[in-house]
Structure formats: C-alpha cells, structure tokens
Image (tube, rainbow, N blue to C red; front, side, top):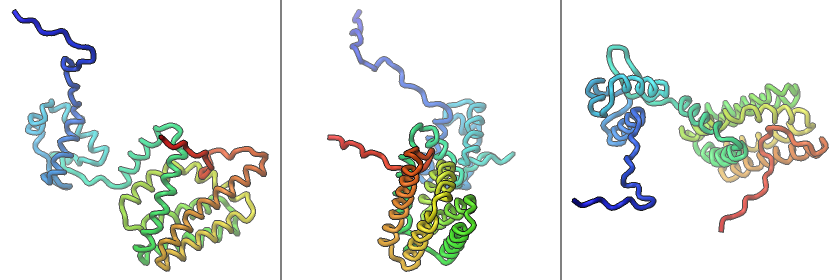
Length: 270
C-alpha cells in the first residue's frame, strides 16, 4: 500500500485555508455586485433566506453582519421590507478613516505632511472651480480673521482659520478631497487649537497670517493656480518659522502638539 511522502519543511499544502468570516463574505459579495453593476444605491438585497443560502451562512449570522453594515452606512434595514444598499455619506466615511488613522501611534507629523500636500493641490483646483458661494464663504472667514487680529480672542481665530481652509476645500468641487480633509483635520483639532493659542501670544503673527490668507484669496479670485499653490506653501512655512522662533525665545522649549514642526530628512533607500 503506497504511503504518502512526508511533508517538507515550509510546505503549506496540508494547511487548510482560513475561511472568511460572515462579515467579510457579505462585504465581498456587495463589492463584487456593485463593481459588476448588478447592485446600486437604493437596490433591495435578496430575501434573507435566499441570501444566507447563497453565501453559505446562517440567517442569524447574516442579520448581525447586516446590522454592522447598517452602522457603517452601507446598508439600510427597512422594517418589514428588507435590506437596501445605501450610498455612504462622506461624513461617515471620514469618521471611519479618521478612527483608523488615530489608531496609528506617532503618525501626527505624517498626517500633517498629508494635509499640506492636499491643501497645496486643493488651492489649485479652487482657483479653477470656485463658485460665487465659495468666494463669499472665504471672504466671510477672512473678515473674521481680520477681526481676530483686533480682538485677539484666540477661539474665534481658530474657527475662522478652519472655515477659510474648509471653504477652499469645498471650492475644489472634488468630493474625495473634502472627504480626506475632513478626516485629517478631525485628527488635528487639538494641535490646531493649541497652535492658535500660541500664535495669539505672538505679536505680529496674526497680521502675517492675515496677509498670506489674503494673498491666497486674491490668487483664487484671479484664477492663478500657480501663485495660489505657492502662497499656500508659504502659509505653512510662515507658521513653522513663527513657532520655531517662539520656541527659541521661550528657552528652547518645544511647543506640545504643534503642527508644522521641522523634522530631519529621511535617508533615501539605496
């Protein structure tokens, strides 16, 4: 009677592949159906019994998975009618994305780099696509920033600054940019607040920022995307310089959770 050859080291042929969990099966099913054009937002899924049989899962497990997908805004469960495919809202997706980013320790500087790159390109798109309502929103935010230079309340300046940059992002007309910016800025709220409180204490810093904000705005009005991108990059450089000078005058003590701090260059891979 023939005997099978002994397994060689590293041979994984005898290891059973891991079975996908119920949740993963349903997500993969929805992804495949949507990509194939067989499912669209608003379409009703197959009846529970039929879908469970097709996926090879129990009906109880299927219900739990669908409830999870409803929380993620992928599925809408309508009592007595069944499950329907939803179109996830950017706010929901950005919260999920933001949560994933926040679970990565030590990523603050990397996230800040991503924000700078995003904004320098966004201001180009805004120069091409800004509508009257976008321009009005930027103008209103600039007025609030100018008032901040007089009142120096700190809180108002932080909100006005966020409003100005958010208006630029909306003016791109690109939903993906808005989604990514929303997720990124939600992670930087604390440092943004602390940064503004620091700038509030530095004489002339608010005036310098107002000048560069005004320059960005005028470039967008003129549709000059190259100058707008250069002004936006200059905006971030000015903040970095102001905060670096402030840290030096404070005895070299670093400012906690402040964005735009300089970092040593990374060594290139050979």
